[in-house]
Image (cartoon, rainbow, N blue to C red; front, side, top):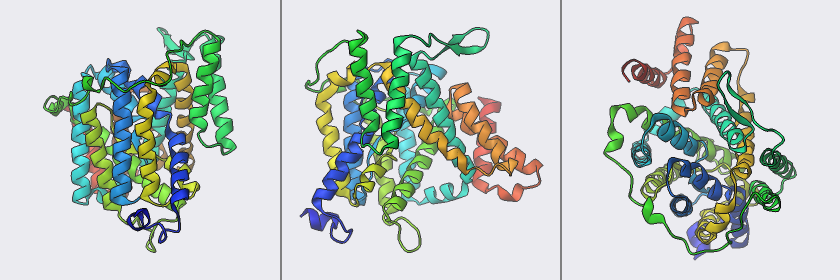
Length: 429
């Protein structure tokens, strides 16, 4: 049955390979189980409820991807998007987490419509590659800032806005050791390097008396605190349109980039270099975002860590289905997730930041009309503590610089539309 449904022979794989590939992918991205509740709980959302929502949203989204699109791609609440949800929307704009979930819901609905009417391809193809890179780099810097703050490396300073914390404190030292361990393990090709680093840092913290042991296994509970608690109508305020669009754009770019990257790695592109069943994959991703908002978590999106499973031989949706089952099993380990301290997750945030910032090497630095907007986009995100502000400022800069440089023909209509929408936001909101 598995052979026929997932077309394993046709894809050159088998059940054993697919299951092992799924385990590899899960171990590589399992850090989200602890990191996402840690970030979202800063909004006042109950940790237990977000933990359960994270596991179920990841299991549901990944299962849909495997069964509908037959891709070995896993989904979970996205890094960067969860930070924007917490620090940009709820804490930065003073919006309630219920309304913020409503924004995630509407962004998911828009993504479903874009996928259904094939508008997504037009948007993605029209956005310059440099701006896609700028968004990725900016989110990486944003995550690095959050990680450094969580570890106590960077603290508030009235004179200079930010300054160094107590760099000799045990938390800072452990965060650095965790980051170094994750980096070294990843370089050596060790599967699950991020979750190993997080757990090792937590264990060291326990011996230093910084972590209290609360058990490992427990029955899942608490989802009712976030389940269907989103404020759908409250998210339709004019001032929140930019937030909805920011969730949408980042999800669209992230999903498209991930699908193309993992497809290339697994030789899954067709003879024309296109992704087969792309529409189904996008529909799976967009519906997962809607479902996640109903459960009580930020935008659910495709994970680049799926490449670990593909490198292990995963080629079909059975890999994704394996990951989905493992996320459901993870529901019973909430006490372990709650024990993981901020400085341990900071190690993971810093490492993810390294991976995202590395894409800046693809920028053509000799063409300043491409490079300057990238820098504006990337720098604005951490300094304004807002992904939305970074995207808006970047697109406005891109259009203005291109026009003044006499290169307006380089700018696509959709880029003018995005920049115009950003200007209207600055003028009227």
